[in-house]
Image (cartoon, rainbow, N blue to C red):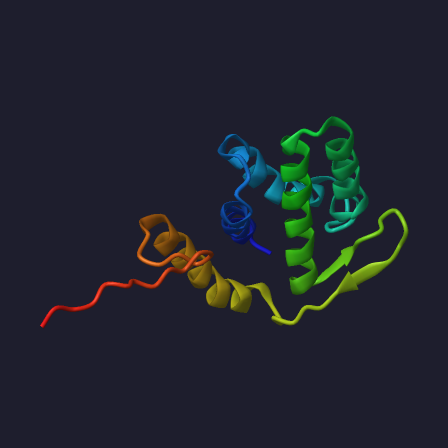
Length: 143
């Protein structure tokens, strides 16, 4: 998946979970960080393993620091999005690959879902609609 798609999905997820704003940049960085493996080893292997987010969840439970929670959620979002668009060695170093590839190729995914993500981010920020807390107006039109 494209890094832009990971970043936009992470931004949307960050807003919906209402994590402290000071972790926003870290959340976005860790949402694309697993793709660093493309420079070193086979893509979607060790850095896409579920053991890394589990490690950060344990750190969160031990130290009660929301930073570790934010990191684990952003890593999990990256892994899940990659599972949707292809195969991931989820239990690496165990050679067990999982994936759906329901979109066929990345271009179709980007063309369909990136505009939707942009739309949700745009309108949520401007308060035209509230995706997570929709309130209906009780005002009546005077005749």
